Image 1: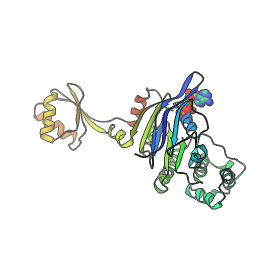
Image 2: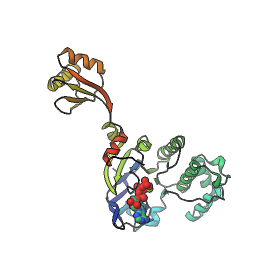
Image 3: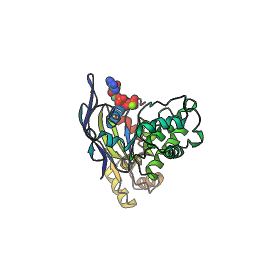
Image 4: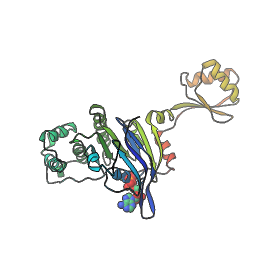
Length: 306
Ligand SMILES: Nc1ncnc2c1ncn2[C@@H]1O[C@H](COP(=O)(O)OP(=O)(O)OP(=O)(O)O)[C@@H](O)[C@H]1O
Ligand SMILES: [Mg+2]
């Protein structure tokens, strides 16, 4: 484990509420970390603290193994970010917008700007006024601006907000290629699990300012994989038969009638036939899958997301 970013009891108080409370999260070098939470959960507040835009009420942030408070300039030079609506000048074109920003960051090489525009696929649209850009193009320009100085860590606050399904897919591909081909560690926030399901290696779920869970994506998917739910008259006999007849070992007994089979080597029909042949009455047999989105909704207390 090689943490590139770490928060220690990070908290932010606004008025009478904790927008973020005692947050301990860790982003490992090289991973894509999905920072997931419903509207108002505290994602942007956390990210703003990570970028030194607001001061934590309590707690610490360590990035590249040093304290943000004491090494702000150094650390921020090695980070790229998009935070909510970061404005561009609509009456300037993409290159001009990038140049203003690059100058602020002390980047002199025009080549760096060209390279960044090429990576995000805007090279051919670089002389178009940004005011005439679509939302998806503006988001991509935001990424170009965030990567122009070759950051090691990229922090993206809901970069797919407002994009259509194709735009979301393109953004996902771009983010993935930045992680894989350029070796950039990425923290990406979202309020939609399915959006980062195919992208993140790990997710942290924040709810009402509290980090509920930090979990490996594979583990999360494993916990929500397909299973066959069976209701039978004699559960202990059914279990014994499944083990001896079909060598099924990955199952879970729910109560004295129901069990879930995660080993799906046998078809439901075969299982049904075998149990019935051995005088076990089957009253329910259904293939099920806990949806990841359902899991997220359940974890964060139900209701509509978004
Ligand atoms: N400047 C502020 N002053 C007072 N309260 C604030 C401020 N910024 C955020 N909050 C409150 O802090 C909580 C967390 O807000 P935050 O913007 O971090 O959520 P979020 O997870 O980014 O939500 P969204 O998905 O809608 O972007 C909310 O209750 C919000 O009203
Ligand atoms: Mg936000």
